[in-house]
Amino acid sequence: MLPQKARQLLLEFLDEKDYRSSIEDRITYSYDASRESCMPDAVVFPKKVAHVSRILEICNTYRIPIVPRGAGTGLTGGAVPLSNGIVMALKRFDRIIEIDKENFCAVVEPGVITADLQTAVENIGLFYPPDPASMDASTIGGNIAENAGGMRAVKYGVTKDYVMGLEVVLPNGETIHTGSKCVKDVVGYDISRLFVGSEGTLGVITKAILKLVPKPEAKQTLMAFFPDIAIAAKAVPDILLKGIAPTTIEFFDRYCIDATREMMGFPIPTETRAMLLMDVDGRASEIPATIKRLHDVCISHGALAVEIAVDAAAQDQLWRSRRSLHGALNTIRPCWEEEDIAVPIARIPDMIRAFNAIGEDHNVLIVSFGHAGDGNIHVSLAAKHGNTPSKNVTAARHAVLKEAVALEGRIAAEHGIGMVKRNKIGWNIDHGTLSFMKNLKDLLDPHHILNPGKVL
Ligand SMILES: Cc1cc2nc3c(=O)[nH]c(=O)nc-3n(C[C@H](O)[C@H](O)[C@H](O)COP(=O)(O)OP(=O)(O)OC[C@H]3O[C@@H](n4cnc5c(N)ncnc54)[C@H](O)[C@@H]3O)c2cc1C
Image (cartoon, rainbow, N blue to C red; front, side, top):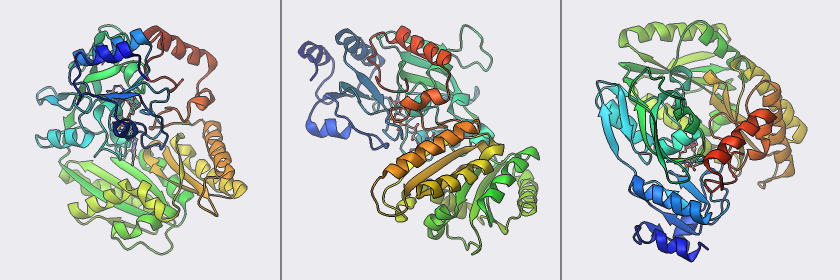
């Protein structure tokens, strides 16, 4: 329950559409895509920065926990109100304020859906590359707060590479502005980066200046089929070493191929045990030569065949299959537990060998797919028999993360730490650095009202 005085103050400027506390609304905003949940006492839908500021001021005064929320597609419980209190849904901040074509940037509010921004800029010949698989639902605010990645990261980088400036409301209600539209800008500390990936724990993002690039003239999609996943993984560093810059290099293991085989609509050689799905983009005249080089590297690494998508519809079909992988795996097992790890690209074959060993040791089915071009592997784990979560799966997850760390990798690549990995953050970050992070949190949010229980 919120303190009565705080509720009264909120209702001075929020009407009943903007302040909700019905059981239906509280349940709706109690969970995210991590499947973790906790009930908020109320949900607020501010429309103006002044509202965000006043709400935070009230929460700070009455020590009410408050959790910013975009679309709730986060996979680590970032938008779950772990300590109850208020969920601040930013869906009404949904304006693309400006697309500045001459200066290659856009000014947007945080509730804009990622794919909507992409469509809007592509319509005028520009391109916003970050493309999390959830982009049809996820918001720009959630992407910035999670430093979301995606498939095009191998060529274009991740969300942090596109944030030029931010407007942020701090936990005490103060509003600050970071960065600018200038490509070169060293005026003061680079505070934008502090908020990118801060998972809603340091401030509420209310506006962003995002970098855009020219839209590539053409794109082509190809698939390389391999008899073994370790062989496929070995081809990846070689592709990059040869200076070929595909937009994406995604890999599917044999379970993922089986789960999406029909959806892909391509005949796949029967001996295939792994697949690389790759896009190249750029000038139309240069694409055939790039495709030829990719083809040759894959064949030299033992690919059974390399196929090219015949037209845009076939390309879309393939990428739709990739984006549906999370759901498609449910045709194999109804309940999976997932990990999101990163290893240096050259260690991907070692990590894949480790999955096999860990699966055997713990009698667990381990399925992997992901962004091979940047070392980010998504790992799904389920009991070999039965459909309920088991201690074996938990132990295998633990072993997967430990192995990633042993291979100089990271326990979180693009889905954040949230609530589900906060106890393991010390596996990657040393004591002194963690203390520095805690001091920063204390400085900005001394009463820990903003998204408590997340990250640290
Ligand atoms: C099927 C599926 C596929 C996915 N694929 C990818 C992928 O390829 N790459 C990837 O990186 N992620 C992926 N994700 C994870 C998720 O979509 C991303 O983390 C996304 O950035 C979350 O955006 P959201 O708007 O849903 O944020 P939410 O889930 O609502 O919130 C995420 C975090 O951001 C904070 N937050 C939200 N808005 C603000 C704001 N305005 N100010 C401050 N903090 C804020 C929240 O407090 C929370 O901590 C996937 C998820 C699903 C379900």
